Image (cartoon, rainbow, N blue to C red; front, side, top):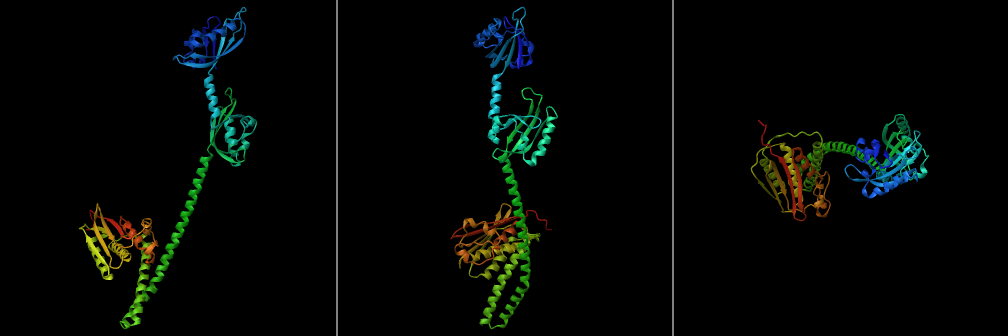
Length: 473
């Protein structure tokens, strides 16, 4: 509150306190000698003079007016002035005490408190509520007027009450101390809300005389945080379960694969012996061929299973300098002999040597060409193309088959996945050919992918880096 003493006759200021001077932008000494008219807006001076007259004539001992005062920078500020007559000397009023308050600032402060979403309370050292802003009703469902006298600590969740009591005691014992923390409070409807609470010791502050408690409701944020933590925990549990299942599957595949090898070797050996012993055109020779073909198919499936598991564990490539064009020529010739009814065409551009495992690249090419043959019509053309794209050797195997739906193009590289729509569902396979192709390409630092158009065919791409400098010597 600003205070000043002014001459009762002409309103000249004789003494001002720092608050009075600061409200008008002056140093205290700079205002002494100025008249009240000098710091009053011209339109409001008449009201000020009338108030002085009423004091001088004894009509009143105290007069309150609202007027605009002029700051040092010339800007007006609306203030509330209370003029009171100083003790009379010889029956006359010699001086007037002027008290000013910045009502606009007070009103803004009050509006800020009233419209804030944060609850602002004043409590005593025992936690008894002395005052609360209107937000108490909006946030906790408790009327601010009827809440006075309630013990706020009683609304604290049991899990937090001990810490809240300790914080209140610590702040109450130290003037000016503050503490902040997270707390759960019970609403009027019995539900619990999460709040960021701050308490500050203002016991020695005039007009407050208590501990100021501010509550910021962040229940929605806390709920989202809790949901996130729970979701992450559930995801971690699911990942652990998937890891366990994957390990069990790998163990099972390994056991089954190795257990199958011995009987399959016997089956293939005896079927070959039967073919040699049987007459060429006999039924026994025909049955022996069927046994050998089916046994060979099962043997390849077992080999694919074991290779796929090996390549997903600690698998080391046997890297050597490889002439990829020469390697593919051998693979193509081998596939031509095995499938004389297919037109397998091969085109290769000159390439540098690549640092690669030749056996695995042979497996990659065999799988790609075999897959293209399987899904091509009888007499269809399968094209094998090799060239260089940037610093990579780029292999393309193109067929004129039934094609792959767009939504399946990525799935066909997942283990055991097979396209089961249209004519593709009638074609047998293990679902491991393309996954093995991709894994071999990635082990070499490359990649594999497919593009297709239904009814027209598919192109499967595989790229591996070309070693520009070979440490082969």
